[in-house]
Structures are given as structure tokens and as C-alpha cells.
Image 1 (cartoon, rainbow, N blue to C red):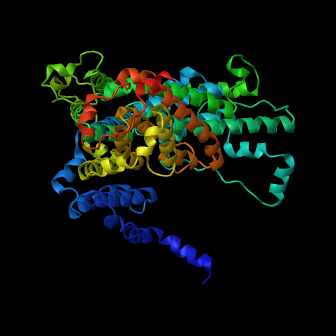
Image 2: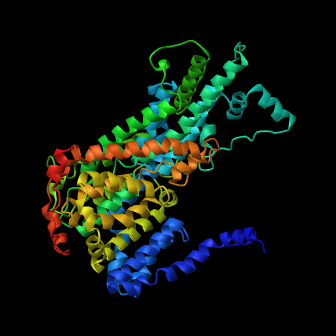
Image 3: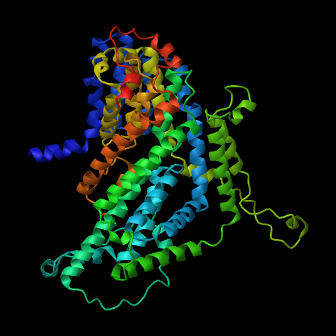
Length: 606
């Protein structure tokens, strides 16, 4: 057989081959390292390989600790299994259930259309509106659901602005190219609607928006130049939504899985650390999100033609007419939603109550409402479960006292704001298993001594100034997560980063927070995140578009995180000193005999 045929056959079974060969390839680790550390490292590397290559589904790989840690003598099953549903998972679950109720009653569409009607329809402002809406929604919904919902809305607005995409592509070609394509019989394929939300775009009605176009008096060159500009703007619209969703997810603990991994591993490694909760994380990460979102908007608008004099001056031309049509489309669709109904109002109330209670439980800078309960008993998970439990019995229709006394009233079934079937269908249970697998891995690394053993081999990094280390850690993880799941990435590296911080006598949060945020900054490849994949599946973006845009976005993200950590982050979390809660963990490792640069002196040089 030819080599090409053999290679194709091997590729067809490459996952099965990997499942068989990887355990054999890593087998020497069991015999060359200290017994317990070697066994734990064997499982960690094996799981990392399966996660990065997806040889097994991510959730299935996450369950491997249940069978491997007990059988290899690393950790007993009674310690492994509880890690799969600790309180952090309940907080995540409550956020997902609340998000499903928001989607059930269409509140997310009302928010999106309202924001877009406020910011206006000039390309740069519309890109800003898309990014603001996407980032806000992804703070509470999943990044994937936000992208799937926003892209069809964007496509409908873009078609109102510029017309059909395939017609626009044809106008971008020179007359000679169009004639050649016609002679050769080449036809363009219609853009398929996104499979994730096929009906959303059609809900944006175009009825009554059609108007008779005036005769176009422009030359062929002017039409081609304008069409090329419009095509660039279209790309900017498509690419800004998944990027904004990824950025927005970092602002809340429940916004993305790596944030919850951080909380879980902090509680495992540093039980006395109570600095990070929903309120304190939001106070730190929300300004960071706004900063990065603004920088990202400037870059995307600049790259895709949105920044021009039209932002400040009104011109009456073809673009102005298209913008008027798009504005009318947004207003018409918002009008068709009608006034806010009882169910939307109730969901809005519980949504705001959910956020307020989480923020005020223990905000650190003032006394929170948790002081009314026994200390240490009430957590963010308790708050979340209380709120979402109410959704399953609170009525979706306004209760009426007269209904009880009117024999002619229609006896309609009682419908709560959320049914269990809807919640069950909407919650990504595989992510909850993935979180549990990460917590089980972190527990094993701690109890087996693997984290300390790795930390001992990271001694040369002690010579790197902590501020530089923050940038290097963020950059490394932002690059690594381009090829692997962000959840899997933070699960693999966070224990190592925590041990590194202990070894170099730096506040562990100074390294762990930027590592966590950096895992969400995957912008360069379609495969990096599901939101990127959904935008790429639209058929209009190319890989080079994402690489070109995403490379600068990564740099902006790294700089933003570094600025946040060395300014308000230092003040909020007292990062300039080595905390008492880290000393207990430090006793498990040998005290280094070298002098490490202090955080205080490092911050002074920034």
C-alpha cells in the first residue's frame, strides 16, 4: 500500500492508538520517580494527554481519577468521589440553572436588542454594542450560548446594512473576475445559518423594511471599494462576538469554569484563604473586563474599518441609508417583543437578587449579610441554590385573586418560571464532571506530594522578578489554551503555579489569578474555544483573520492582566506581602535557602 493510504488509515484510528500507546509510553514514570509522586504524575500526564487530544470525551477523562487514584494507591475512593460535587460545583450549577430560565423567557434577546438600539448603528458603535451585550450576557450565560444567540442577530443587522453576503462577495470582485467566474460556471454557495440557533435569525423580521433602492450612480471601482469595506466590517462583527463572550466570562465566578477551578483549588491548598468570593472577584475582574473590552474594541474597529470620521459626523450617502434601515430593523424587532411580561419581570428580579446577594454576602471592605448566620456556614453556593430553587415553583403568570371566585375563568395548568426538564436539558453536565475531575486531580497532587516535588524542581524560576513571572505565566497559559480546553489547562497547571508561588515566597494569588484569567484568553484559532468555532462555522471568517486579530488581542490581554494585578489587585488582595494562610502550605515544602526578590520591591519598580 502507498504511504498516503496507510497514513489515512492510521489517522482514522489515531484516537484508539493514542489510548493504547499513551499508558505504555508514560510507564517509565512509575519506576524512575519517587513512588507516590511518580504514580500521581503518571495519572496527571495521562489525563493531560487525553484532554489535549480529546482521545476520550473530556468528561470521561475527568472521571479517570475515580478508578486510577484508588487502584494505584494514590488516594482512597472516599476522598476522590466527594471532589466531584463540592460547594463550588453547586455555585456553578445554580448559575447555569438561572441562565436557562433567562433563555426560556427570552430575556437575553430583549437585553441585546435594547443595548443595540441605544448605541446606534454606525459600524464602530454597533461593534461596541455587540461586544458590550455579549460580554454582559456571558457573565451569566455560558460563552457558547451567548455567541450562538448573538451571531444570528448580528447577521440580520448586517444584511439590513449591506444586503446579502454572497451578493456582497460578488461585488468585491473586479468585473473581469465576475465574467471569468460566469464563463467557467462557478457559482457561490449560500451561507448556511448557524446550526446552534437556526431559528433566531428568522425571528428578526424584515417585514416592512424593504424599500425601493435608488439607482446606483457610482462607478464599478467605487462599488467594488465600498463592498470591500463592507466585507471587512462584516468580519469585524462576526469576530467581535466570540471574543467579547470570552472576555465577559472572566468577570464573574460563575462566568467560566476556570474561575471556579481557582476557588476549588484555593480551598484545597489554602483552606484558611477566604479572600476570593463572588463579590471580591467581581470587584477585581469587572474593571479588568471593561479595560480589556475597550482595548479590544479599539483594535477590532481599527482593523476592520469601523474607526473613521463617520463616528463624529453625519453624512447623507449610501451608508447613511443602510444605517437607517438597520436602525429601523432593530427598533421594529424590539417593538414586536411587546411590553415586558410578568415572567420576564420575575426573572429580572431574581437575576438582580442573585447578583446582589452574592456581592453583599462577604464583600470584605464592608460587613456582609453572612454575619447574621454562624460563621463559615453560609457560602456563595447556599445563596445560589436558594434563588434557583424558587424558580421551580414561582408562577410565570401573574397570580389573580379573582380567579378563585370566578367559576367561568379558564382553568389553565400552573406553570412555574422553570421546569426541571428545561433545566436538565440546558445544563452542561459534562462541565460539572470536568470541574470535579480537576478538583480530584488537585487533591491527589497535594496529598501525594507531587505539587511539592514539582515545586522543588522550579527553583531556577526564583531568579525571575514576580512581575515578569506574572506576564510569562499569563502568556504561556494563553498560548497553551489555544490548543486545549481552558478548563483542562487550568486544572493541569494551577497546582504547579501554586507550588511555584510558595517556593519563591510570593503571595500565591499573585500567580494564580493571572493564570486563571489567562486561560480564558484564547483568540487565535477556531478550535481554541466553542465560541470561536461557532463564529468560524459561519463560513465567512478565515483562519488568518482570527490569527491576525487574536495575536494582538492576546498581547492586549496579557498587558491588561499585568496592569490589574500590579495596581488595584495589590490593594484588594494585599499581594505585596506573603500571607499567613500560605504558611501552613509552606511547611510541607523545604524552606528555600536562597534570597527571593520581594513583592514590595518589585512593585516599586513598576
